[in-house]
Length: 220
Image (cartoon, rainbow, N blue to C red; front, side, top):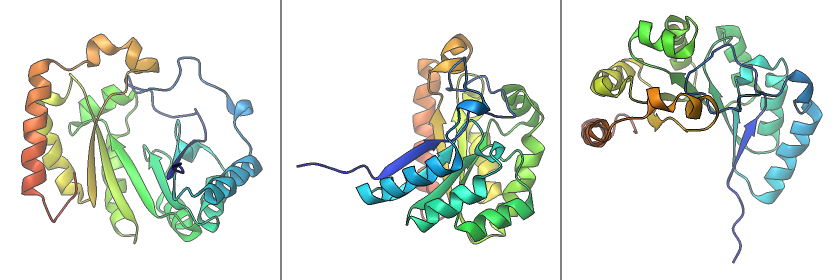
């Protein structure tokens, strides 16, 4: 018995305005000239749909770095794929978001490095936190599914409850709490990022309690 893939993770660029210490992209990232052109991605989306794929996750790098993102969203939507944008939000204005939604974007996943602005900007290597907070409010005004992603590690797990409360105030439909993936820069910085056993045990307890408390209001 064979099983067709259900989702396609489309890493459409390595370009990104942030410099996150836990980035899992290669240390030697590909330049713009190595990216697949628009027409190739459109072909990939159509072929994926014919294989039975249901979802496409547009990621990077930062997918907003591509000028043809609206065209890619439109092509994925036309192929019948549920289209999710995984983004830092840097470079996303309200008019551009409106254009992406009009093109068929179904879901947006907005990443946050921390609940505390100074720590978040340190992890990201850029002053992006305030923009993300304002963007979350903008996203809620659109009829689009909304997930907030938190990457947890040694530097922020001791205030995980605070971070969950912060995300509650942003009012997404879904909260994703993800550990760093130890590839690329995350592997290089693992001594700074790797949680302790105590932190992991507390994390499981705190997340379990939040899932129970927020049941019916927000999926974790």
